[in-house]
Image (cartoon, rainbow, N blue to C red; front, side, top):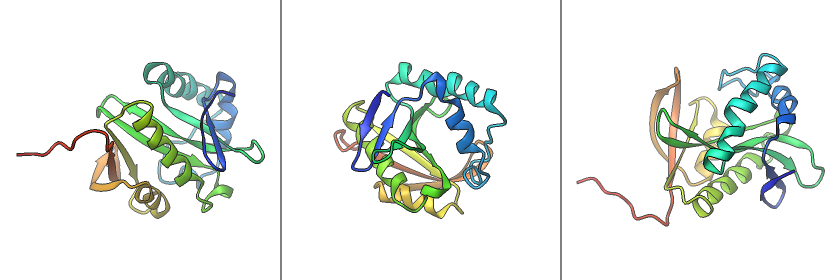
Length: 176
């Protein structure tokens, strides 16, 4: 495994071409995709997402959505990471965890580590995070990561609460 980030309880590493089953199984739970509405239809669909969306980000940008494992047991618990979205010219923080690991602070721990990585290792100026308004737990993760609320907006056909955090290494840009 190619570990990118380690935290107190988690290890984040690059997905590989062999990890389609991890993505597929994670997305089988309707509660996990309840607010994102992006089901993975079968194993070949998961492989397609892996090869066309996830893996190219690593080579293009040096970051992406990473597999998250518990350090204590090496069990796959979900994914977390940054993703460049060219249509909006923004870097998005995203996370998705197996339901049995919700409420344990793993999403916040992984998300904070990804933000630090983006700022410290990739010199990213700003990171955006979004969650459905009714997804209170996900909104709380964004807030706990120090993100500031920007707006409620329609994104990819869904209403989203948009948050952002700026890299403190860059001077603030003020409007006149």
